[in-house]
Image 1 (cartoon, rainbow, N blue to C red):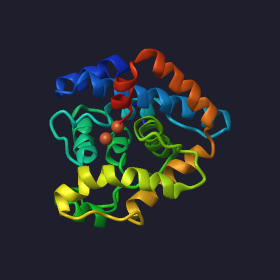
Image 2 (tube, protein in one colour):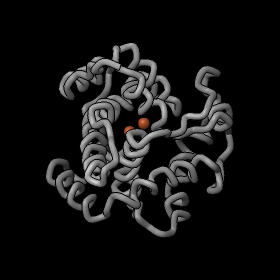
Image 3 (cartoon, protein in one colour):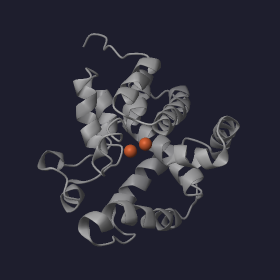
Length: 222
Ligand SMILES: [Fe+2]
Ligand SMILES: [Fe+2]
């Protein structure tokens, strides 16, 4: 394979603007990309190869469809948009799997048939990226500790958010905390947390707190 051509971050941000996304979304995408690269460096220092170019571009673009399609399958729509922009499949895949829905869950949520398949992370870039999107959501938006040794508490915290935003409006029903999606999503994040310390995230969070007012930072973390 020849060298794939990935535009610099500033140009990727332009794609976000052209797709009617808000400054909040652009700040969110940059936060996820910065955290993902930080986690990647820790893996690379341990001798695990991670493609930082793919990771950064995917992190910047993962929510690109939100401006026009604020739906649970926005990652899959984003995947198709990213390919249309000419970026390679490994970048688009990060959008596709950023919420790791299974085929059954996709059907339950009435996703279009072409998106009814498993959207599971399969390499380090994908797992690191899911963690970088989830850690600020859990720690800053939900105000829970992603490093807890009681993962049940994390699921209890996020359950109302997912039920109100996803399951109730689409299926008319709430899901319980043993719903496989939550277990799969947190297990994938925890695999990364075993290699990424709370103290490094505290440092990262301080940098964010010096950049953004508290209420806005919560929205950026969402
Ligand atoms: Fe998203
Ligand atoms: Fe996101």
